[in-house]
Length: 468
Image 1 (spheres, rainbow, N blue to C red):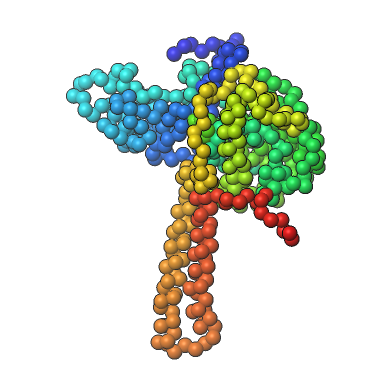
Image 2: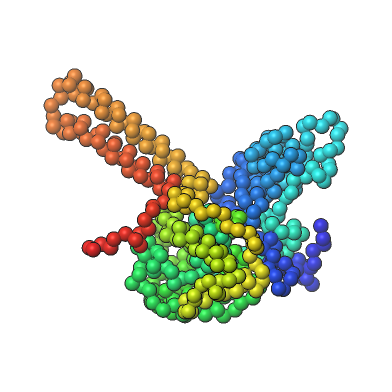
């Protein structure tokens, strides 16, 4: 490992994300979030794919930190994520039991004779990637390990500058389109009144959007919307893009206080990314804060998944239409961008072109997905989310309990009334309504259960307007 260059203060000198070449942004030379810490399970390894590379994430009990390895055992290349955390806290391969320490070195090879030294060979090591924990997220650095300590982790600066008083709603989802497509979408505030009409937007709020890019370079850009959303009623909105994967809108209004809309776009593979969406609030009063704290995380995720699905299908198709016209390098010819509402979209695409920042250059998109696959929630979110998995299990258990109570009431209460000779009207009504009520609860829980598995096919914007 190379010696870190240090400043006169003795601290490591910061290196730019994207590598040292001022004309090119190497997407491997940057930190990416891969999971919220609260969604990781310390008892077993889990898999994540970053920039096309399969990784295994696991909790190192000996060092009390999260680790990330390339998800291949050096022995026979099977995925370590299919293994387990052994009794001594090491990561154990499922195939032959080779076990690895947190730095990747092999601790034991059960098949070698006593006194053997094959486990000491560099070829016996798993490939470890640098990890870091910041602002409730686990970050992984897929580039040169010796650079990682000197490259700044892309955190949300307002949360660092004044950490007190923020209330934050968080969600994530694996999306069926590129990280760049996601960034292009969330940088574009002008789509909100139309795409998200009747969810978080309203067509009546549409108006000219005059965006201005005030600073740009290899490390990203900053911009401003002087009038701000809702026809200027909320005030100015500032936008920051931190290359290669982070953006946030910053809005302060007298009515609501300060609001951030934060998105990390972590590239999984060509045509797929994981979004980490964060919504930090500093309210002008304590009442909204009180109600947000009462909202279960899983219930918030159901609503936020629905909002993501407002864009899901057409963005999946949009990037394929763009690919057919030459891809992102031809965006200026493929897109017609006549207004300043697209200034941030243009700035992002220009950044990609100017610094050769496409994380998957020349790779084709995978085949189109069906509507059912595009609206899948379980594999893209629920299965990875600790809160939603637990809520789904509880709902399923409650549903079976309700069915059991209803069945017992249906089978045994009427004969019991006949045997006892009860003729009181309230008791008879209770006997009749009990199984019906349990049936209604069973159906309602079933509808709620489906929302963990699939999204709605018709977005709210396309539903008939009331009174029409």
